[in-house]
Image 1 (tube, helix red, strand yellow):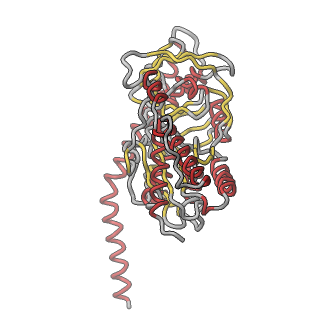
Image 2: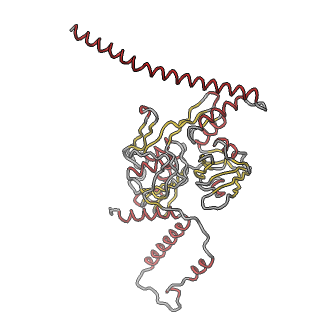
Image 3: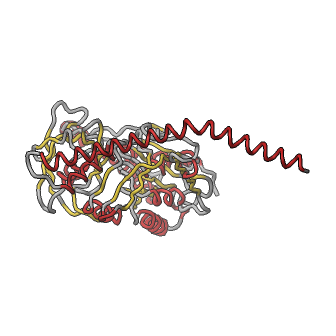
Length: 444
């Protein structure tokens, strides 16, 4: 027994010696690193004091420190930033769905301000701002070299005031100006309507109201249709949706899934990773689902599209999404300010990261740019004649009045579909897919 104890003690002692020998250089390296950090902080203090005392004009010390903090955060990635007390308060208001501004989500791309997407029904949307536009000037003042927060600050202003932004757009040879009147932005998170027997769920943002609006809208449309059997499927339209709250993206995904992973997040430390799983219950009751995305679909939109695509719960159509696959955590700071810091990447159920790659649709469908049709084409359409227009043509006596009425109703629906195809080709394509799936579904 004594030998066993001694052997154990010997092993422990050897372990201590070995650890000390290995840890020595590591401790020294860490001490050197800490010394370098303190030297850099001393350097920062020296520079701050020189600016405060010797700069040609008197500076606001608080603003100077805020600028230094903001510079430190924005050097990390386009989504990390410092939020002043005013900015932090504004962000809290935005998540509740009402705020003042233009109605665009922007990011920074190689020093330029890029529009992720305009929000439906806002002044920017109605003025013709498009996803992918680059904003180079605000009221004639260049944005080049400004931080994203400073650029956004220039675009803010009193409700009712005019702002002129200069835009560079792919396909346009010259920059051009767009005049926008600032307004109070009231976000309707979800708009639900029916197109024939298909239900369209237009989700514009992911705020506190998104899932409740979606659930209520679906239930109302199903009731108006006369029950779920009268609905051939649902279209989840996430185009130009810049994202928002991760919690709402998870709830919306869960609304169409009965089981399985929705999304996972992975930070620097493995222990900080999280997985979010679906619970039983499908708002669509198993009906076919099509998801619409484009280059303005970002962040939370991509979480939903990726989850439904990986679980083969939906067919995703449109064009490649924006590719924002990182998670930002907002951390309150002293003085009512806050820090928005990128803390993790998110991954779809199959384990793919969307960062910088985006979600690729199952079927690529471009949205054609609208072009005015020549007047003569309209005239020729009006002049088109059929057998029924010929004088003395025979009547069709093989059909009853009800059958003729049904044919005319079907023709009217087909013409409405053709008009929709002209106005919104991607949505019309999605509706056609649902019709095809419904035609192939087994009859009950």
